Length: 155
Image 1 (spheres, rainbow, N blue to C red):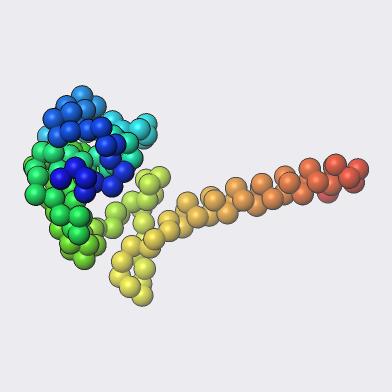
Image 2: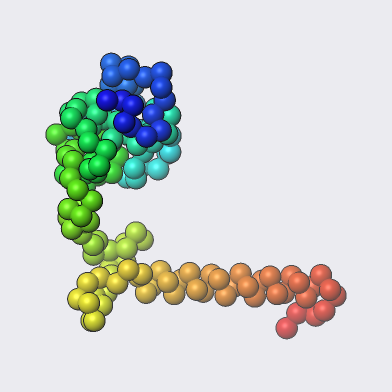
């Protein structure tokens, strides 16, 4: 069964992988079992035990009956959760249908609704404007540095 997990180190057995995952995880108040993978960022999918996704490895060792054709989905919506009761296998189409758009961007701004589609816009206008402003400032700074290196006066 462990051979079906892509990127998993070959030296793991089911017992050692189970122990490894439990040692690297912490229980939260909401019932999620959060794993600490190779990355330090919280709230994203984690890789552990070689280069295997933690939630897939947890599904195999805690739940069993893993099918590589199906995707492992989080019922709780927390990507770094490995609680066995929060994991289920569903098809790719069902996984796409169950996703919901977030009403706020990752910086906390309210997203606008696109009038043509009735869905939230993919790009937050405020974040996009800030990014464009930073880009224009960076371009102006590079032009000024280039002119200064050729001995031209900056405007």
